[in-house]
Length: 212
Image (cartoon, rainbow, N blue to C red; front, side, top):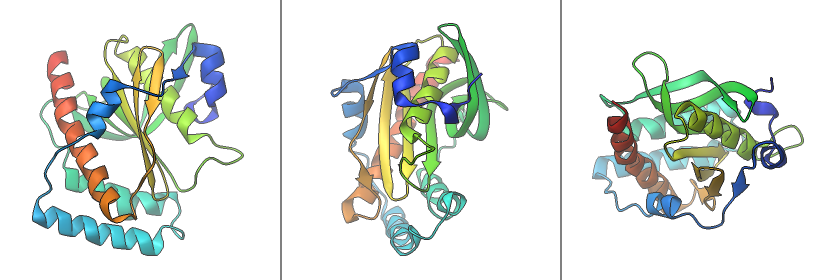
């Protein structure tokens, strides 16, 4: 049984028929966020952005999480009565006869103490794809497992971070879409990333309420 970190994009095509689409209305709807940013939050985002600009090339993965990603997620504030946040939790499911499992760095899911119905998966990386890693492939297989756990009834949302770059994804049936990169060190992109993450709150609230 291969864990998430051993899956590559080509294997997802060969094994499960998961293919990338260039146009997804669900992804476009998510990315086109008109969420407002309170003034105090805007100041905090600028402060976080400056910290990222100064240290992003020096941080390791854990430092990137602690010093930037976690603080950004805290500003979004994902507290809810209908879903919870979970970090480094294992997901497992059978997909087309293949048992797949692995840990998700961070997720939003239904479940009081353990993730039951996952809706959003986030993976964090210090560096982009290297010889021994395929962050996009690892995220997609995690999203596919989440989809299987949900009996393939919901769109699964995802994101992965490579240093300063953020990529957002949707998976529906056997097709996924990937956004262009958002550079968190670029002036406007930090606000766009925040708005996308904030809009996700409403999307997940609706999905989670349907499950209850």
